[in-house]
Image 1 (cartoon, rainbow, N blue to C red):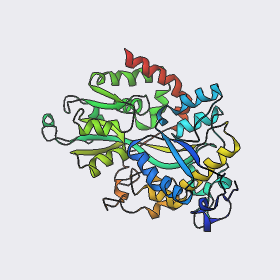
Image 2 (cartoon, one colour):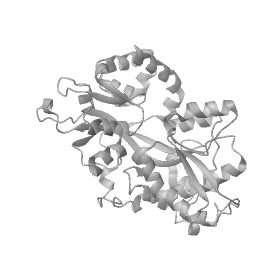
Image 3 (cartoon, helix red, strand yellow):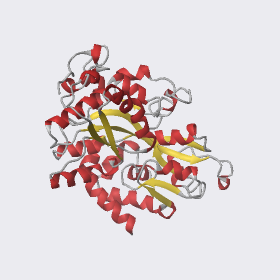
Image 4 (tube, rainbow, N blue to C red):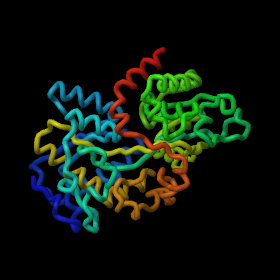
Length: 369
């Protein structure tokens, strides 16, 4: 297999067509999150890539939420079966630090922008790890039913309304993990936004966050897959819940459900790819060729036709247009739109990379009490 990663901007958007793959069919296992997000990946770059390389096929695995634990187990067993894994930035940092992800020389392994800007400059500060290939900026925000009789016509406009069971009664849904939940709990217990992580480092701060979550615990349905909260809202099993902004967009705009967005204290996060460590050189090259194609300027802009996540490359932003099927402008539905980011909570990737294992354990213990 020959490498075409440095052939320049002129062929950066089509280099996969000329890669000399091994004879016979090639199947790559891609790990992602399922639902509307995975569909956007399939439409924007998996299907175009297969059109250029008809002997390549993809096996999709929806295990990204448990990728760290599963990659640890695979490495321990000496049998890593995944070729490319979609993870959030803090998980990429952990996997890289533990030697479970392949280090990437971004300017050598990824195509430049169409004007020749090196990949490292095009991705800029989103390159939070030597092993991470950024894909999108997304957020975890809130959706709520707009037809709740008990709310007497009121609609929430503040993140702390989520904790107000008197004004906004009804079942809630939150992700079954400490990330975001502890930050929101501290905010709504009175901690200033710029002190959240400093306070959360202390045992007293953690106690304070869990005490706030105790106030709503018996009204919470816990979700683990991104497709769950929009379905719970659509089925009216819950009236208020956290979810990925792209999944909420799908149920609101594509399905027309009586649900609205609450952007207050949305939490920005990064999502992207890692290539597992301990793969053969051939498998690494296959993964690199696909991920170079999938994260070039045009492909990242194309993904925004299907889901409102901000492309990780600066050069992709001007190419974001309308939804592929609905024909609506997508920019206003992005978490990065000025109207949506007025009170954003900036997620601390490195902090969670350091504290995730301990707080995961405490969170699961708290859930069982």
